[in-house]
Length: 266
Ligand SMILES: Nc1ncnc2c1ncn2[C@@H]1O[C@H](COP(=O)(O)OP(=O)(O)OP(=O)(O)O)[C@@H](O)[C@H]1O
Ligand SMILES: [Mg+2]
Image 1 (cartoon, rainbow, N blue to C red):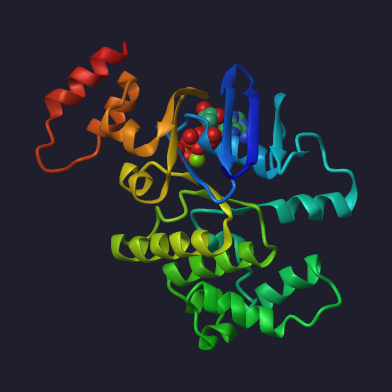
Image 2: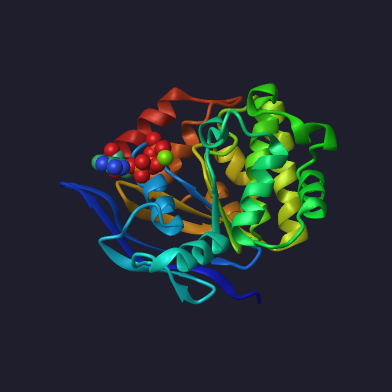
């Protein structure tokens, strides 16, 4: 049994009277993939931001490889060390890529920051290769790339620091379905090669089915259901999970059943 790489215990975060995250606990195994699903505003991103360290928790603990990262980082060295443990890929990499910095320069910058003094030429090639970007993309600026290619750059930059955990927040939501499938396949390959643990946040239960082993379902900041993805999707126990499943349009989709599921939630 692989060890837990990420342990989240009793996480809380309120904004005024809104309980954005309300007693959230879960674990992620080394090389595992855990999905977080839930409607808009259910607390998925806030949970992710606390784990990454972009947001503080009011209470609770986040351990990565047994190391507590809940309190404020002390100094630059600890900030960098924490960044090497957990990396995040956002929905729109355009916002996090400098428009004037080429793909190769982005990767070199990250490598220089975390592994100063080394020659990174080979590693840059390796990363481009790993995310399926040819060496021709190395000189490109973000605006010269497609959405899928930009997301590959964001993934390469995250991989550059050799993280233990990769948090993907709606990372394929903005992409066309065919490009989504390519990126999901790429992420599956990378997980096999590296044993990086994924925390996969998405609205899309099709994505959850495709790329996660386990799933937690969030509502109003709390976890309403958790378990192996196959069993949760095949036989959801909580009415809210059933509602999420019924909300996915598909052949045989029946609006009456959605209404019934909604009623059961009241
Ligand atoms: N910085 C903030 N200030 C005030 N309220 C916030 C802040 N960040 C999040 N919230 C609130 O916390 C709740 C959870 O938001 P969060 O972004 O975590 O939800 P989400 O599940 O990621 O939603 P979505 O699916 O739309 O991305 C929401 O009610 C949101 O309005
Ligand atoms: Mg969100």
